[in-house]
Image (cartoon, rainbow, N blue to C red; front, side, top):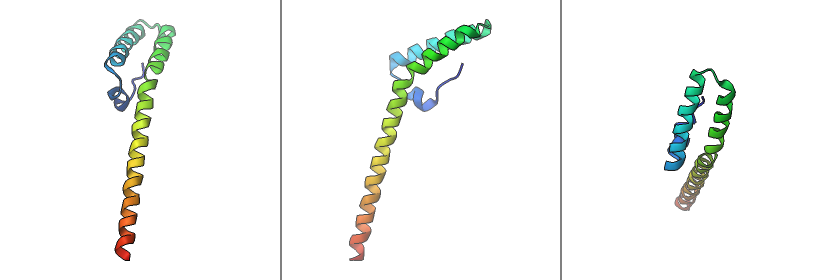
Length: 84
């Protein structure tokens, strides 16, 4: 079973995280029973479950990029004002 990143796990809602943990437990059990045919199905379900959290992570990144851009634009304006 492949875990998702800590960043993505941190953005899961409580319900999503509970479901994620339950699916991981099922997947580990199936792996211990060498039922890799079923593990594949569980892993696909986990991959689908974490998609909203991945989108939330992307949104946070975009917001941070915009804030950085605004900050740098403010610095450039400040430097231009000081030169005058």
